[in-house]
Image: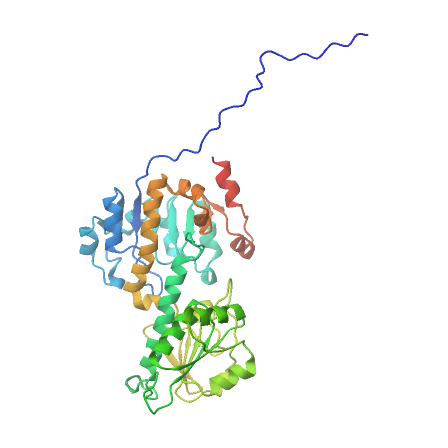
Length: 404
């Protein structure tokens, strides 16, 4: 039987197609809502009047809830003069397509959230609740966290700013509670000629530890820094430009130094979950009477065994004759500076979102921004949160690519 010869249909063309380029859309105009924060001890506001003025001048609309800036001593008049609309009904602010908060969404906010809304706020992993994430997923919300926002240099600018404020504030707080006016032991933090310098022990050589060390040295104190990360200790010395006393976290050496110090600062950080407890109750009991502990790590549980959460209304308690200062969210106590720092990061980011044609376009073109996205149109894109709450994880890169 004869076999038929293969043939090629003339309707098939073996020619390459033209490449379609990824053309950016024209600039988008944003409608941003800034609600008044009702979270515990939150005084910051995420955009200052100056930043709002720049956004409005670029054709965007900003709605600010009545008295949203009072914790940072910004008045409604400051915002209205900058071009913002002052809103007296909280539900109206929550109708804005983009919400910018200086505290994480809380249970009371959930009924007010809109479908397909975008929220830019902190996330506070240690205090996160499963029902909040589930409700935000139901409403197909896109959410970006302050903590994970990266800049072009690969660092986390908002976290760094808040850590710098906390580290700088630590020595101001220590000096305040060592003075006789606050029933302290009447010691000047630092020292003068002929009198041995005050001894400060700092546990943690991260950004908080570095700025606490800078301020303590500037006041003339004798500083000793502990951390288990030797690279961080080396980096700290390089950043300071001088040799200082450093050690790894060896319990006997730490206990010996705590016995003779006036100020002990807990600044150990943890990538996720609770901060490690490295100072036992016995170590605290052996400290000098009237000395002060400032546990900056209290936001993540604290690194002193004796630490208990306090508030700005009652910031200290005494245990084993040692004053403990365990107020969370220290930057909120310096709310105006903290608000300016957050605003300096968010305002240029929002202008860039306008230029890129919207947030989704921005996420497509800016890889650094993807680090901060933990919800994308209701899909959970943060692996740590999915593991912690046993929720479905979706890869953000696949989600974005599937929409092109």
